Length: 185
Image 1 (tube, rainbow, N blue to C red):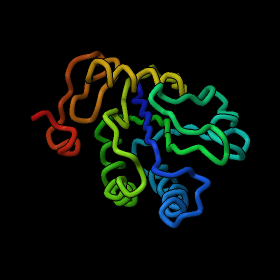
Image 2 (cartoon, helix red, strand yellow; image 1 turned 30 degrees about the vertical axis):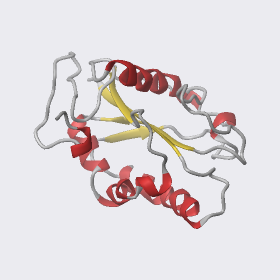
Image 3 (cartoon, one colour; image 1 turned 90 degrees about the horizontal axis):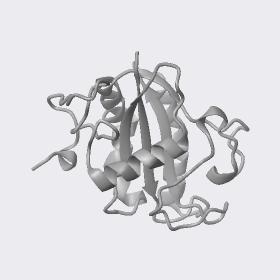
């Protein structure tokens, strides 16, 4: 049975190394959010550094998830002092289950504060696509899909909650799914 891959990417207002309270708050909340989401029904896995998360995103060993990659529009640093991004790559059993995990609890609270931490851009900040059972998406897959979504809008190749597709490529609009900002007007 196909699984749903999710890649998220955001450019932070300040580098992760910045000791400012807002940056520390975002960084410190990540562990609790991952712990909560990892227990949610439908959650399957997320990219974790094989070496225990020592270093920057760019120099970590991500194992089967591949070498870390970022969209072409990311123009900030790549060193421990200058990295200013947050990115996730995860696998889910289905769209509704992913929605329920992302738009409730601690993660919902963090989403409500995203503009405290992240720059507003004209680029999408997340993308879904279907992968075959047993496949592990890579960071480069996520970047490619996010850039495809930016260039072409939602398609079976790369889509959002509100403009989603079933594994067979047919539209799969689910009533009440997706934030208002993601809806077609």
